[in-house]
Amino acid sequence: MKGMFVKLALVAGLLFSGAVYAQDKGTADEATTMAKKAITAIKADRDKAYAAINDKNDKDFHNKDLYVFVSKASDGTLVAHGANTGLIGKDLSALKDVDGKLFLAEMTKLANEKGSGWVDYKWTNPVSKKIEQKSTYVEKAGDIYVGVGIYK
Image (cartoon, rainbow, N blue to C red):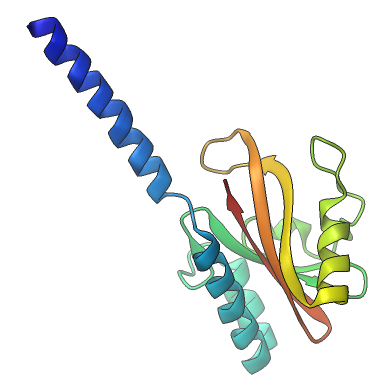
């Protein structure tokens, strides 16, 4: 009987930890909402919005594993990045995922040709520290596009 209780406790613990991890993951709806909120803020005051996006403590543009990045629509050069400000000013269009996919170049192309949509690729999850499937929503706004990605 005691062994069965221990097994049930272990299973419950695993299920609970998985549920907690799932709560740490942003959803597609949360990502698109965050991207649209960033576009609204950028249209109102670009410098103030970029500062907020770059500030990891800003709750509007950082939630769970979600963060905003902003790139120039002309060439994909990053102008704001919620997870790594060291990337600002860099053209990362040649950056590939582990499968060799030029995902940032694809985001730039999608934003310019369709205005908005999703790009799938593999990237390191900041929470799990493992390479996972990621899908990023991008939306063009004038001379820039905004992106927010989710891990699947």
